[in-house]
Image 1 (cartoon, rainbow, N blue to C red):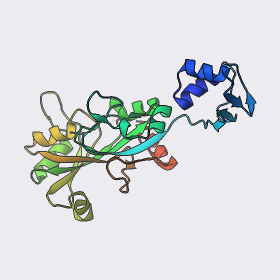
Image 2 (image 1 turned 90 degrees about the vertical axis):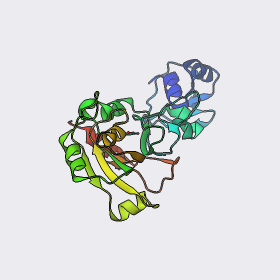
Image 3 (image 1 turned 120 degrees about the horizontal axis):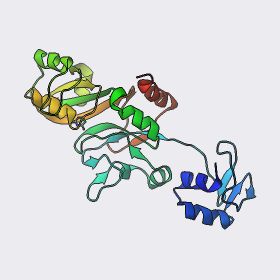
Length: 249
Ligand code: URA
C-alpha cells in the first residue's frame, strides 16, 4: 500500500495532510524517515511511525454498542445525538465507523458498529439477512394465535408481508431481567429488517410495543455488562460468528 494511503486510513488525515506529513519528515518506515508519498509499505509488516508514534495497521474494527434511547442510527445528524457520537473521538475519526443498519430512535440494545463495508452489506442484504432477536415490552399478553400468525409469515399492512418469524413469551429470569418493574414481554426473532418491523407486526395483531430492545444479531449477543451508551470491541470469536451467520446464505 502507498505510504500516503496508509496514513489516511490509519489517522483519518486527508490525502493532502498525509502528503504534507510525509514530505515534512514526520513519517518513518522501519526507523528511517521517508519523504516519498508513493513509497510502498507492507502494512502488516513494516514499522511505520508518525511523529514517533507507531501506526498499527488494522483494516477493520468491530464494536457492539448498547444503543441508548434518544440516539439516531447514523454517522451525522443536524439535531439529534448519533450513535457514532457516543464513540471516543479517536476511534471515530481514525476508523470511519458506521452502524450496521438501523434501530429506531427509541429502540435500545445491540447495534454493531464497524468500518467493514463488505460485511455490513452482507449482514443487511435482503437475501441473507442475519437473524435478529428482539425483546419487546407490550401493552397486552401475546396469544397462541399471534404466535401462529408470526410463524406463518403474515400480511402486516399494505406494504409489508413479513417472512415467518418466531414469537414466544418471556419467562423466568429472562423476563425478570428485561422487565424489572413488571409488565408483559415477548421475544421475537426476525430474518429480515424492514422499517419499524417489530412495531408494525405487533400493531397488526392489535398489540403495541411500549419498549423495544435488540438482544442479538447474526449470532452475537448483547453483552449484559454494557450499560446503555457503552460499547466494546467484538472478540475474534464474535466476529467469526458474524461472518459465519451470513456465509453460504
Ligand atoms: N423493529 C422496530 O420496529 N424498530 C426497531 O428499531 C427495530 C426493529
